[in-house]
Amino acid sequence: MDNKDKIIGLIDNYYDAWFEINNIYHDWAKRHGMQDTTLFVLYVIKNTVPYCTQSEICNKLYLPKQTVSQILSGLEKDGYIIREPNTKDRRNKVIRLTEEGTSFATSILEELKSAEIEAFSQMSEKQRSTVVEGFKLLCDSLNKSLSK
Image (tube, rainbow, N blue to C red; front, side):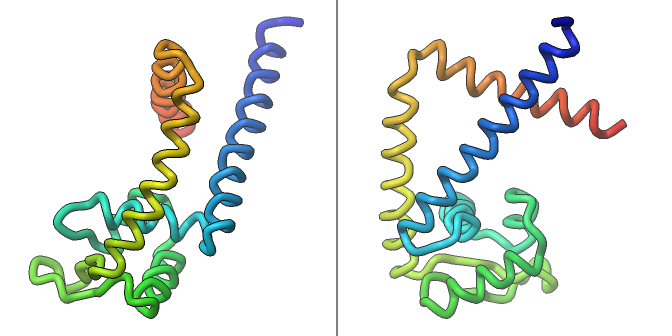
């Protein structure tokens, strides 16, 4: 097997792992009564202080504006967020968690974080660093080769 075939095999394994990781988050979110996209929108809202905008969510998660708008409408209907006019940019509303939304997001995201910590704890410190550094390196390399 030559080097190109080895790399193709690694790419196939990478795709399998990537799809499986996405499916793991999808299944976990579904068991908690939501879509994975909603889970990650809550993550962005909660971790963007003091507030965020729909554009920031779209840019961070690489989701279409319409998808994010539908998710935000559902969260607003459930009383988890409020959307207010942005005095700095009238085209984008400010999104904030309500008190109920903060409680809900904190609870679900802490549960997720605990599971992620448990998963990372099953690896050595070197393995954890290798995974994260490898993903960053792959991201940079893909960005360069796919933007040609």
